Length: 241
Length: 301
Ligand SMILES: Nc1ncnc2c1ncn2[C@@H]1O[C@H](COP(=O)(O)OP(=O)(O)OP(=O)(O)O)[C@@H](O)[C@H]1O
Ligand SMILES: [Mg+2]
Image 1 (cartoon, each protein chain N blue to C red):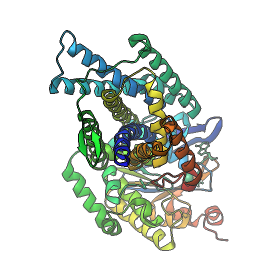
Image 2: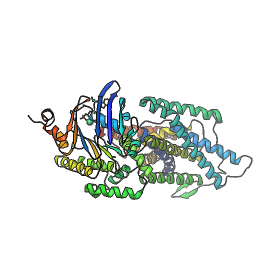
Image 3: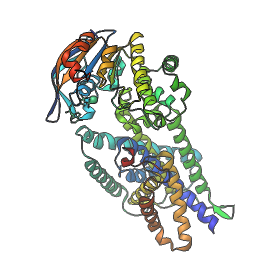
Image 4: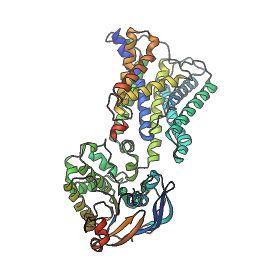
């Protein structure tokens, strides 16, 4: 097991955001977290990657284990060294820096110039728009291009587990397609993925397993195929029946 | 006359630009006004004064080039270290407590007043002068007079501005500083340790303030309260240039220096500080984003 979250409870001040949730990701999997707004999906990702503390959140109880090591309370800049890395909600590229500089910052902890160059070539291969516009300020890109950049930047770390928080949010339908295709491709190349998505149908179509969140708890979990056929999921998240 | 005023403005502006650049580098990472920046400027001047006095004690000679170099270097490094100390012992504990911006401002004022009084206690409240040697006649250029000391000030400050610019644009650490300024959380998730960048910013920003204080001390007398006016000018230059913008801070410094000096062409010299504030108010009302047109927080949303 690559990642295991055990009985995790998270608070923001006195407000509870997660209540005793457990989930896991196996090596090679894409796992989707779906659920309504405010149900705690981002909180789960932020707790795993260590950003939670910067958002004034706190893990009250539970355990997060990554590759056999308990990583509760570790900070993002230490976790990336272990191969755990997030593409945050809202993309969060560096707007005043060029695409090239954004990618360079993605490889900040990598010291070997050759490795950085090699990884960057791979990223350019995956997202050719980025190569064409590498001298352009990231803030001037379209939302779709910014999302490509945000994913590309995270890939510069060659993560073992990639956390994606709503990568399709606010993108044009074309780019939504692209994001899901590329997510699949990245997974095929050997990166495990934990994906949070509003677009439940497309997420369940590319993932292996899924967890359905409901106000801070996991309502149910199953293979993606079963969730797509589950009546309640179809009613609440797929807009059917 | 006007050539001389412009030249004086450029020289004053180069000092303002150094202060504003240091202030801006720190502001970009911590996002509050580090008022104690002014006293770091004073400390740099006094440190260099001490080194000068020490090296000159018992002789009536002038300092050699090496002596000058040592005095300047110790002043600059000392100011950088002082900046690091202020962050480690005052701001860092406050950050851990998630203190509000108001707390940071008050703490910053406290540090300013404490250190200014400390300097007064050690050196006395009176004016001191660095013995840079006999006053020589200046050189004539473009109908204006410039002294050796002024050439040194211009040369060193412009050199520092260029070096800093290249550092921030080209080096990995400089880029990481820009990344943290853009989005500290995003910077953190790519593996940049924000605390390290904050410390670097304080070291570099404070060294620049120290350099400004040292350079000015070759030209005028020094006194413990000299940092206050310098701080105000640095802040005004930063705002006029566009708060948080690095080229804006540099440009704002020169703009302010030249505008102040041109202003006293027609008005009495005593109004100099008024001119600076008038410029500030005009900018705040008409162009709050500054010359560089930085987007204000509201526009960014
Ligand atoms: N920084 C914060 N401070 C206080 N409360 C927060 C904070 N972030 C999230 N919350 C609260 O925690 C709960 C879970 O939020 P979270 O962002 O994890 O949900 P989500 O499932 O990602 O929702 P969305 O689909 O809107 O992104 C919500 O009730 C939210 O209001
Ligand atoms: Mg969310």
